[in-house]
Image 1 (cartoon, rainbow, N blue to C red):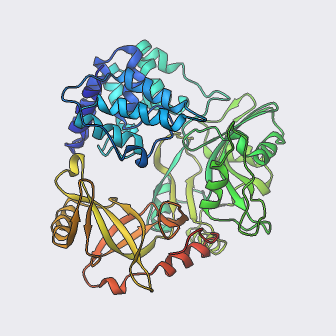
Image 2: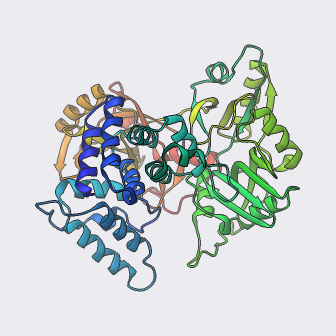
Length: 528
C-alpha cells in the first residue's frame, strides 16, 4: 500500500469532527492493504511508528531535501527504513541515520514529509486515538468491537490484533488470553476535578465500599513472574527489567510461582522520602550501551533507590483474576505482597474519610488519590469510571513568547504557544509549549492577537512581543536539558488568557523552581 493513502486518510480524519466519519475513513485503508501490511497500516493510522525508538528527533529533521513531486513510497518501504534506522548503533551510526532520513524524505511528497515529521516526533495531530483505530478494525473486519478491544488489551497491541482479525476474524481474536510474559495494556483512570465528583463517578451503588488509593508520582510498572524469571515493563509496555534489579528482587521474593502485578515504581532518597517524577524517570530510562543499567545519583552523590508499590494483581499461579471483581483481586494482593510494597489504600463507604485520606496523601507529598470501584473487573487499556483520579491542579500565569502555525484541523490558525516565566533580572525563561485545552474560539482569537504581536515570521514559528499572559494548568515541573532554565512543565494545558494581567505580573522562574523543589526535585543543571 502506498504511504500516500495513509497520509490522505490522516488529513481527512483531521478535517472532520464526526466520530463516525473518522472511523469510516480509518477502516478503508485497513480493508485495502495487503494482509501482511495490516499491522503497520494500523500503527500508522494511529499516528505512530512501529519502532519505539529510532534515535531521531527535531534536530534530525532541521535540514531536509526538497519534497518529491509524485508519491512513490510504500508503507512497507517506510517501515523497513525506520527498522534499519532503529538498529543503527556505534561509530558512523549518526551519519548513516542522516543519510537514511535524507533518502526517505527525498522520495516523500510535501504532505508525506509533514506526516513523517509528525510521526517521528510524536505530533501527528489528527484526532485519531488508538481506541478509534480499534473501532475501525472492527468495521473493516466485521468483528464485534468489544472483541477487538479485549484482544488488544490482552495482546498489548492494536496492530497485532488488526493483523489477526484480517487473517482469522472473530475466531482468531477469541484466542487471545492473559499470558505470562506477554504484557497487557494497563487499566487507566479518568479524571475528576474534586473528590466529591470522583466519589460519585467511581461507585456503582449507594453505600458501596470503594477504595481510595494514593496517587504516586512515579512510573507505571507491570511485573510478570514465572519462577525465577521476572519481566518488568512500563505503561507503554517497554521492557525495563535490566534497569531495575532491586524491583526484580522484590517480585522474585513474593510467595507464588506465577504472578502478574500492576503498580508504580518510585525513586527514594536515603531517608525514604519520595523524589520527583523526573528523578524516577531519569533512573529508569538511563542505561549504558548493551543495556547495562547505570547507577544514577542525586546531587549529594548518593545512589537513587527504586522501590515498587503494587496496587493490583491480575494473575496468581493458575488463577486468572483479570475479570474478577476488584475486591477479590485486592484480597489476593494483600495475601502475597507485604504492606511495604503496596500502595497506600483506604477501603471505605464514607466520603468524609476519603477526603481526610486525600488531605493526608497531599501532605505526604503524593499527587492525590484514585477512587476505585470494588466490583469492577480489570479493564485493561480503557479509561473509564471504575478508576477516577483526583489531583490538585497547579496553575501559573505565563507569557507567550512565540506561536506555531497549526496543522491538520488547525491549519490556518496559530496554534502551539511557547510559554515563558518572567525572569526577575529581565526577560523570560522558556518552559515548554502546548496547544492542549484550546477551543476553536480561543484559536481564532489568538490567531488574530498573535498576528498583531508578531515580530518575526518563519515557516514553523512566529515570534511575538512578550505581552500576552495566559493561565496554564499543569501536573508538575521536571528537569529538562532542552530549555534554558533547566525546567519544563508536565502536561501543560491552557485554561484562559488573562487580559487583566500584564507581562510584568506573570509568575517568575523562581516561583517555578520553588514548586519543583517542593515536590522533591533536585536543583536543575542550568540556571536562567
